[in-house]
Image (cartoon, rainbow, N blue to C red; front, side):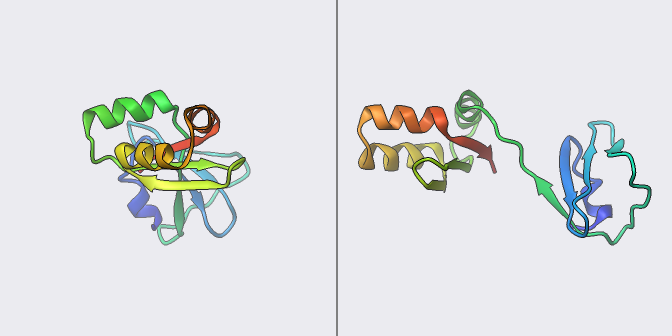
Length: 113
């Protein structure tokens, strides 16, 4: 995304691809970034910085919209899943016993797509 495009995404954080500068766009549209950087170009390329959420937040979001896509990463078990909550739970239960499912859910990072 270009600088002018990210400005439409309030409440999110982005990282500039050229040098790693991270910028936060507040709900009121204010741009906040680290000191030492002075220049922004409208054609800079940016990537959204995804913030992990808790499993409880995943449940709340899925309760609101059961088509919400959830990205789960568990480095200990080398699991990466990108699906709805229902599909995620189905796959975990099919492959692991209850104790392992609980451990996976407690130690994973979750992102809402």
